[in-house]
Image (cartoon, rainbow, N blue to C red):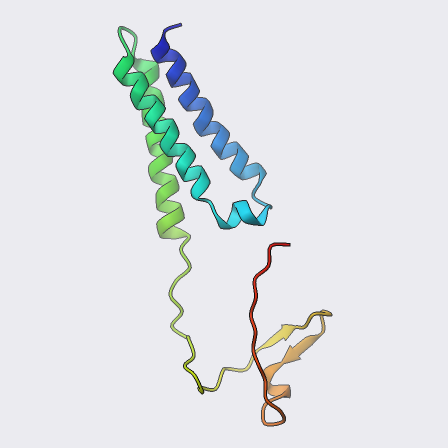
Length: 133
């Protein structure tokens, strides 16, 4: 087995491993909320495949196959991560002093609480936090 074929196999293993690891760890909030890791893994796999093509002599189709697949995964992953999955800018952003729309959300105990229940009775401070638990 030539060095080019080994690099191509390593590239494919790295790319497929990144997909499998991301799918397996999708329930972990840090992985789900920061998918840049798999795009970086695809970039590394593409670099390994490009090196395999550059070092290849004779039978280079495994290197070209690895380069094509890893490049496709890199472009698709980057497009999904940075274009499709972006959180859109919120057109409903409130300005200071502006009245918020009514909503109902569960409180810390799970009981539904509506903003309309408090409107005009006492001051309300809205606090939104995001946790990784």
